[in-house]
Structure formats: structure tokens, C-alpha cells
Image (cartoon, rainbow, N blue to C red):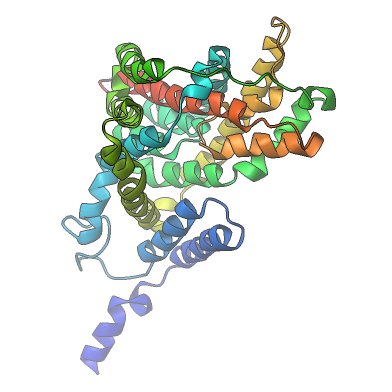
Length: 376
């Protein structure tokens, strides 16, 4: 009986916590949203199940938990804390991204840049609320709606907030179809949402091959802290566009990125142990993340409206919302909102321009923060 009692003490009987029960419920909600509502299932299902794995009550010292040095989960989690997974995901993103939409209409790059304003405004807001400067920078990057970038930066500047920041970033990425449409409609009039844009002009193969090389040199020179993200992104795109490394590009954008997404999502979810996750700072991070994402969306839309005051060929301001880095979900949302006003108005290819520009912009913003604060 003593042995049986000792066995029970190892699990939930000896380690019961209402916090763990709450996180188990949150994990089930994430799985439900991914499966039943189809909200970014490739992210929410692994993260949700990871929350279940990370919040089963057990005694410390069993060398099982994600924070116990040398455990299987801890070894896999090194890919998050050391920044391996985000860089590999950027390689896959680069191998599947067509920058032609952006290159054919370069002015749309400005919309992607404008949407990054949410990052810096939230950074300032976090400072005002009393967060240390490194933590404020890591929280601000949530506004880019780019999960890998948020993980990469927080692992370098605020590793103790990594779980909260990662879950917040991926949660808002998944909720793009819920958050962005009301903001777009609030900031635009119907006649603006009905604007039809000219078809994109074709881009030569030579330009598509030269772009990742030149863009990497320029961006990395400005923000060297982003080399590990932008280097993998543009290298993946060069594999795609060169035409001679299709096997490598196919592997990067399919099997490899799928494997890394599984590991990243599961590890991020597992890291949300209630004792570390359910804190006042985590709640503030979620609130600030929502504000950051909303401000980034609004900045993109408003900047498109301002740009229309100075250009002859008008831009549909809906696509300004795609300046956040949630590729391609923000572009799809822009298409959906535009199609409700005019079913024959096809905005998705135009929206992809600020969308992919936003990926580059959020990585550059992370590089600026990292270059500025990592040595301080």
C-alpha cells in the first residue's frame, strides 16, 4: 500500500493544481478552434496538444518535463530557445513565396512597412507600462503577426517570456479572420472598398533571381541582427527562383517545414506550464499583443488611404491590412472583405505584395531590436 500511495503521489493526486487544470482546458479550446473552426489548424492543433503535454501534473525530478535539463522535451525545446526552428521555417517560407507580386508594384512595399508601426508603438507602450526595454522589444514584435520572428526575438531578449509571447503571437495569427475585418470596415468607406486595381505587370526571371541576393545584402546590412532569419528566407527563395535547385526548394517548402512546424508547435505548447505561464505579465502580454496586432492592421489601412491622396492609380485600402506578416491569411482576409462588396474584385494577388513585404519588415524590425539591445 505504501508503494501504491507513493505511485499516486507522483501524478495528479500529489501535484494537483487549478492552474494546470485551466491550461488543460485552454489546450482543448485551441484544438477545438483548429479542428472545428479551421483557425490555423497547422498551428493551433500542435500548440493545443502541447499544452496538454506540458500541464499534466507530475512530480519534479523525473527528467520528463520540458524545463528539466536533458529530458526529451527539453532537448527538442532547444530548437525554440536557440532559434533553430524559426530560421528553418523561414527557409521553407522563402522556398514557397513568390515575390513577383511585390516586385511588379513596388509602392505596395510601403504598406508592409507602415504595418510595422504597430511593433514600435507597442514597444513604446510596453515601456510606459514598466516592462524592461528588452522585454518591451520582445512584446512589441507580436504586432508583426509573425510567430517564428516573435519566438526568435524573445528567445534572445526575454527567454523567460518565450511561452507567453509565442502563444500570443500564434493565437493572433490564427484569429486574423476574426480580428481584421471589423478594423478594415471601421476605417474604410464602401466606395473605397470597391476600388479596382490594375493587374500586376509580369516580372522577368532575371529580376526574380537577383531580388533575394540584393535584398538580403541590403536588409542584413541595415539590421545584421536579422541575418539568421533573412538569410534563410532569401536563400529559400533563391532555391525556388533559380530553376536549378527545384529538389531542394521542394524539400524546404514541404517535408522540412512540416516537420519543423510540428516540433515548434508542440514545444511551444508544452512550454506553457501553469506555474510559469499564468502570471500577471502573461495577461499583460496577451492584452498588449492584441493592441499591437490591431494597431498594425490599422496603420496599414490608414497609410493606404493617405497614399491615395498622392497617386493617380488608386490603391484599395483593404490591402493595407495585409501588411502584417500573417502569410497568406491576411491576404485571404483582404480578398474576403473585398469580395463581399464586389464579388468580381480580385484583391488577393495585390494583397500578397504588402503581405510578403510585411514578412521582411517584421524580420528587419526584429533585427533592429536585437542589434540595439542584445549587448545592453
